[in-house]
Length: 427
Image (tube, rainbow, N blue to C red):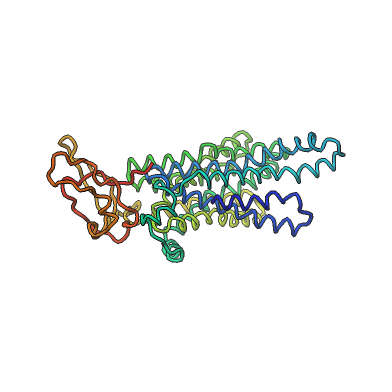
């Protein structure tokens, strides 16, 4: 991720040298690789934080990333451009000063991207336990075949269902970023400046809306279990679809602005709940799943874009988009995550443990356990030697199961002194 930021900073800084349409296309092609940083960031946050918090953390990182795109347009166009034109090139003719200014200001985001990339490389860890290179040397983690990881993630039907649903939320956001301003100009006869200002409300909801969706996913998970994540995700998509119909049918300007704002909150909250589910789909192929789901967003935007292009009645294009969103929400009934189940399906291959606290039994997190845990070197390392039956034996002996033992598991009856809350304690 950090390498992508550093590398993409180069074509960004060279934008001012473009003097042909073909040159602009080539430059935009290379700058477009920066978008892959989204998937890498989602994989990183998934690896760094426990699944109980990952909905909030994934959505905050992604939401503020989307906000950065809108802020860049405002800062570049409203602050840096006039500053460079009037201060740095004030001695030139207005036309020449404007031409030099827009070509020069692209150096600023390039420097920011390069600096952030270097800071990440020098000051961050790959995992809570440290950097991957060091952990491999210590034998704490093993190499995973990228081909096998991709195959496992791509054949999982949940990946594609979530990709369709992500197209129904992030794809809608991309479409609205392009279509909202022109809709206000056409339907309410507003100036381009006024319509653009109103349409920008959609993007600025990223300040909190996507994070709100991730937080809601975590809260519903804590109350209803994993099924709660799917439930709130489906509800937000349905509300989003309803708001699209309301927005497209209203003839009052203020009502349209209100519906646009509420509509935006549901869209971005649904994006947050999507990536509250993604980390559970296939733990061994989290990057592949995140990539497939993430690609669903731009794919959805392309589909909706064709709708607005070929359907002459804009209102009907909105109806088509709203109907697609509601149908996509119904796909939630078909989500069936291994060891976690779905809305209508209970998990089959998982186990739970109980502990006794002050004379009362309490259920722990449902977690996978290894088939032959005591034969695993990594499992032995996680179990301190304690005299069975000792009164001084600590309660939380098994704080965490190694990630490499998460597949092909069966039930395990722990000795009394080893029973504890089993779960990922990363924070």
